[in-house]
Length: 98
Image (cartoon, rainbow, N blue to C red):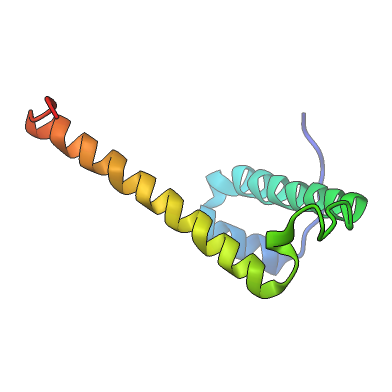
């Protein structure tokens, strides 16, 4: 679908500098998609704010506990990634028997 959109000249020049004249529509489409996704996230946050109670999630009851929980999750994910990389390395080197 086509739509007529009016933008300031300097904005168009900046878009063209970054994306090129042939990439203008794609650039604007991606920017609008990002803005729409952000607006949907903000709507969801407003709608569900306060839905999780401290007593339901004790690990989230203080900023310090949330930080500790996030660190633990990232550490666990990092460990899993290290394991996968080690397995892939073995497969690539032909040492898949282990």
